[in-house]
Structures are given as structure tokens and as C-alpha cells.
Image 1 (spheres, helix red, strand yellow):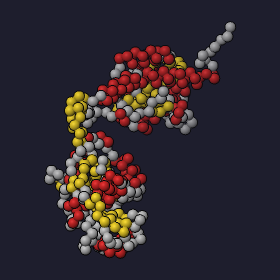
Image 2 (cartoon, rainbow, N blue to C red):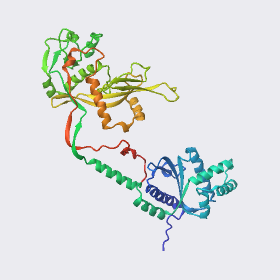
Image 3 (cartoon, rainbow, N blue to C red):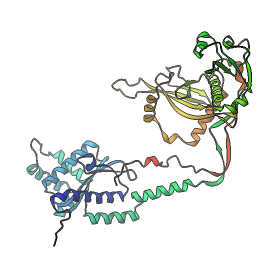
Image 4 (cartoon, rainbow, N blue to C red):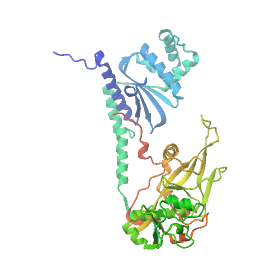
Length: 478
């Protein structure tokens, strides 16, 4: 006959401990706990650390799992309990951390009940601390004084001991899962149900408002050969003068919507004759190039309204010209002042900055494209958060991304907010007053309203406090 000692020999102790930890994990997850740290992975003193965002948000639970029968007078266990006491004191107040001891069995249960009692455990803890002072102190370790004994008693009173073997924990976990609304499996099923319900549209007509609007562009554009070899040569030669927008091709051609009359500075670099062509044909035959021509003219319109542009990100934003102010406001389409730039200052001293100094400027921005669809020109608008260091000059994209990751607030990125921002930008880009005199060709552009589509279903709107999928981000171990 062969004898098998399951988890009974020295070489199997680790496997026995891990099996017990798995049962503890199942038991805690059945009540909505989620594991963040495991000693077998991180190599930490604490066996496991759990959180429970549903019942105890912000609180950490330190877990010790003992797959053995132990006495309170076990020196090894006593030293570990003292270490957990010290760790809990270092992490935060008692309201921020809790200790749970899972143990397969205990010797002298009455002593355990007295020491870990929520009330009147002072006398038993005093005796336990006296025993510890006489039997367990390491070299250079100070004895517990009266104040420390009181805090240890409070720590034990706020801690929890769960006694049960692997089978007990697994059975308890199954029982809890069947009734607890916070078990991980039930929460996952509930979340899946919510997703499934929201995936199905609500029957009922509604209007989809798209983030694109049609624009009427000039019916004709001008094309001619250039006497200049490069675009830079034209800009250098006409420095200090208002140069109409134009495209310069690799064939040394000039394309522009501006009139090629005697007031146009570009005439100095134009070879006659100037060919007048139909924009509609251009939109159909070369929509991408036509979009570039439209885009470069719109930039000038926006610039004359005092709006800056980041050429790398293609994002438009209002600059903060008066740095003494905390924010800049402009009138929106309802005649109400709305902020477009805010000064963000350091709220405390840092290694490189002092409290009150400027950290960065937060701009409401708009990413804008000018696609050509079905032989017609459109403007596509996407509201963006934008950041500068001085309130004016655009900065490197990676710097902006670091700021955005720290300060973004996704809960405000909702459909109503975005629609309001799109209406605001439509007004300031296409309808607001100019800060610089408009050029003659400006009135050749006309801007429509946002494209809408009536559909026979409606989206389901969720409440502002509704948890999103990304709220369930705590790591769990299988």
C-alpha cells in the first residue's frame, strides 16, 4: 500500500499555504472584495491586500492566511501580529485600514475571543503584551508601554479573525455568492446585463446631431504659374504685407480663392494669364487637394477673429494675452460670457516652483478638419482640451499629453456638454466679430448648420453618477 501525505510534508507546505490562500480569496471575492497585492507576486510581508469599493471605498484590508492550528502564544504568530499592528499604524488611521486573520484552527478559542473582542479586551491584551515583552522581544526591541498596549488593544478590537479550513471557506463562499449582491461573479453578471440592455436602442424617433456642418465655398478658384521657385520666396518678398492664402504646387503653380486684381500682392509673382476654374469640378476630381485649399483660407478667417492654431495638432484656441488675469472670457451664441482660457497655478511649493506661480494655461480648444464628401465641402469639429505654458505659444504634444492625463475629468465628457461646446465654437469661428479687418474674399464663404439625421430609435442616457466600465479597474487574481 502506498501512503500519500497531501500537503503534509515539508516540501508540500508552500502548496498547502497557497491552496488555503485561494480559498480565502474566493471567500472574500464572494462579498465584493477585490485583490490588489499578493505576496507570491510582489514579495510583500502581507499575504494579500484587498479593497472593497462598494462597501468600504478607500479602505485597505490587510490579509494574513494561516493554513494551520495556532495558539496566541505562538512566538512566530505573535511577532507577525505586532508587525501588522505597526504596518497599520504606518499606512493610515484605523479608519483607513483593517486587518483580517484567516486561520485553519485555533487553540484555546476563549483566549482568542477575549483578545479580539470589540469590547472589554483591555485586560487580556495587557496580559498578552506582558507575555510578549518577556518571551518575544528581539534584540534592541523596546518593551510595550501603557500607551502602546492601548493602541494594540484598539487594533485587535478593530481586526477580524475568521476560523475555517479550506472546505469551510469554499462552502461559505458558495453560500455568499448565492445571496450577496456584491459577489464578483454576480456584479459581473449585473454589469453584463446593463451593457446588454444599453446596447439595444430605445424605440422612438430622435435626431442625431453630427459634428460636421456644410460650407458653401467660392464657386471659382484662380490658377496660374508662378515666377517664384518656392513658397518661401513669395513670403520673403512680400514680408510686411497682407498676403492672401494660397497653395503652391510642386509645378510652381499658385491656387487661391482671392481675386487676382491689382490689389492682390500675389500679382507680383503671377504669370499671366490667370485661369479661372470651377470649384465644383475640383471637389469631384481632387477632393483631398481641394480640402487643403479650403482649409488654408479658413485659417485666415479664424486668425482674423483672434484665434490661434497649433499646426502640429490642428487645434484652434484663444490665447491669454493679458497674463495678469485669471481667465479670459468671450461672448457665446446666447450672449453669455464663457471662459476660453484659465490660468492654473501651483497650489503648493515644489522643487522647481513656488506656491502661486503659473503652472500652465488651460484652453478650450477645437480640432478642425475640412473634408470633401460627395463633391461638397464640410467642416468637422471635435472639442478638445488644450494646454500652453505661456498662454499663447503651442507646445510639444507629449507635454500636453502629460498635463491632460493628470487633469482630465472624463465624467464631464458627455453628449450635452460636447453639443454645447460645438455650438459655442460654431458661433465664435463663423459668426463672431472680427478683431482684424476682414478681407474681401471672406464673404465668399457661407457656413451652414450641423448635419442632423432623424432615426427611429433613441440612445439611452445614463445618470451623471452612474459608474462607468472604467470604474471597475481594480486588479484581481484568478
